[in-house]
Amino acid sequence: MISRVSGLACRLCDGSNLAECFVLDSAPYSVERLLTKAQLADDRPIRLSVQRCSGCGHVQLMHDMPPSFYDEYEMAVSYSPAFNEYLESLAIDFQTMFDLRDESVVEIGCGDGTFLEHLTSIGLNPVGVEPSRPFRLAAIKKGLVVHNAYIDQSHPAPGGPYPALICRQVLEHIPSVFGFLSGIRDSLNEDGVGLIEVPRLEKAVRESRFYDFFPDHLSYFSEATLARACEQAGLDVVELRPTMREEYNTAFVRRRSNVEDARHDQSYSTVDLADLDNLAHAIIETTVAVRSFMEECRQLGCRVAVWGAGGKGVCALAVTQIDDFAYIVDSDPRKQGLYLPVSHYCVYPPSRLNEDPVDVVLVTALAHIDEIARELRELYGFSGVAVALGRAIQQVV
Image: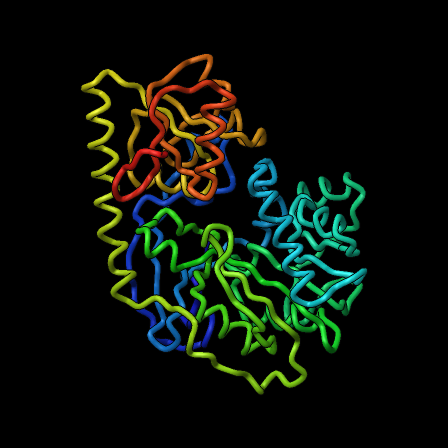
């Protein structure tokens, strides 16, 4: 079960000046763990309270996931060709930034090993660390070297220290930001370099995406708070920029010899309380927009399906509580045949669109929207209307 953090101290600065920004009253317990039919009867929504520290500006949740939560974790987008193109370019950027040749590089939270394969393809020698058994076994099956471990201040990466390190889409899950990043620093050799990638809070706020807030994402980093987190743990930020259509904040870092000698660059973007307050209104407005759109479709005799059983789709359908979509499709075969938490829609493969045609497809996988729109036309011959989830429902071009 989820446990509330005692003391309510900020995960980044350890301060006590936390204020609630907004609440999701019917959030799923997990956006990653879809359900079997037998599990539906016991499924319940949870209340998700999003807090902001007035001292450092860090946005966070004040609960922890169970210690064993990530032992069976599966959340990946390695099935997306466009995302693999992004990973290829990211690997090359990292190699070029630090002039890496045939160095060893460790990836913390390597998942099924997809990024390790990209690192191998450019001449690096990658090793993975992955506590999730299904992911670890999938990576090992590809012939990759992967350790079973959790990283913290007392447990650096096995086999280290390394000259280079990658940590993508992991830091947001970690209860102790400083402890984890200290373990990252201690996993690097004296002049080691790294790349740390997290979801970009600025994007969620700018586009009013309350469905970017999940129970297992304990921290939400702006450029400023990611830079602060790295610097205070002894990792100098060489460059920090948005990547993947501004979905992510990505920091290129170098190990600093003196942990205490932190810099505080004021030029990075941040998110203020007023921006976060706006998300509370977005919950209502997005729900109204989707309901109005569905009513319009009903009056026209149009059926609507949803594409996307990832985190955004799971959260949006749970919170908006709209139960009259025809069905949900997703290209990840691990999700197909399972049910979404809270909303209890069954997930079908995209081929369902040919077997049971609809007039409209609502896309919730916003990072992959261009790729999905292309697949709808080219692979499934879809001639209807594709629209994107948002505060205002807009047609996908």
